[in-house]
Length: 175
Image 1 (spheres, rainbow, N blue to C red):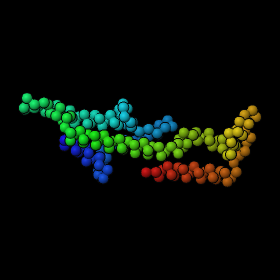
Image 2: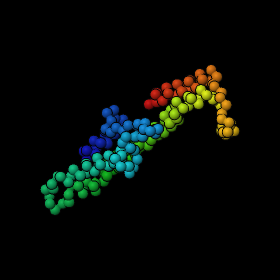
Image 3: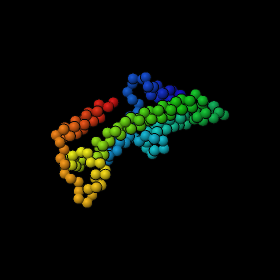
Image 4: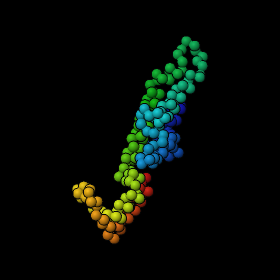
């Protein structure tokens, strides 16, 4: 019971201790991913790590010999203990809650995905040749003869630089 109680205390939201577990949000090949991966049923994922930790807590009882031979093993008693089951459920519930928060946090970056998905060099080349403002219809109407070259005005160029700069600053400052 002590180990599960320790885990619960360490994952308390109000606890100012260092994190017990760490998951990193990384950018890989134009997508953001968590390491270890989040989600239920993911091999080598965060939930698997937690499940293994909880199983190890229970399995430790297998190595404690029972003096009263007529009683069941400690391991079985631990698994059937309602208080321990409630603690285990609390840990799993908190893990699910934190995973939801982490996935929402990851989703908050979607509006900036063009910064890592879009080919920046290609975008700048297109922008310098054609400027802004081509609708899909205009692009389709010039399929045969190509888009007319229309370099951006100074104001368009300044606006594009400002927009990209502001988006990068916002991305940098997100918690």
